[in-house]
Image (cartoon, rainbow, N blue to C red; front, side, top):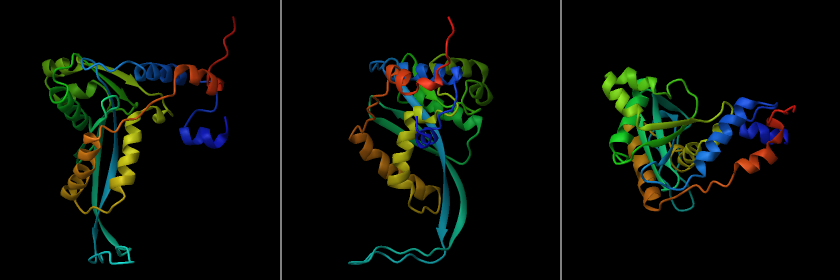
Length: 230
């Protein structure tokens, strides 16, 4: 594999049985048929720097784009949780002030008791961030409630250096290009921008068509697989 492609995908350069085991596990999940009782949901998060204007921007005019002063004032940072159900073409972004275990737990609870309240289990695809575990549920809720929520989750972790395997990252990339590139001075402005992006995208049921399979991985990423001596 070419070095530039490995760097783009964050793929480890040598044989890595832990990587390929986690990769094949996630790829198996992505090729399950759609099942409303066991929906596959990818979850990830990012941050957005909130900035205010020092001078009032000049609006666009015929033949002239809008103009902003290069100076700005920092108004802190907001955290964004992204949940993406690729087979249904549904996504939801929730804005929080922090990205703690409790924030993660409450976001997951909102999914389980909201959109997925009738599902038997939700199949979550996550990266290995330390807050992304059922332990976070026990930090946020009483043991009985934490156990109730945990039993409704089937969690699959992407490998380290394999964040490209999380389809929520694709949606975060789209969100970044279509919405987050704009300056936003505070949390209400951020919420308005995200809402204006999320609603029509959900109405259109914009999906990700995932074509990369385990068979592809065993050919294209063959160098990652350990050599087995029989």
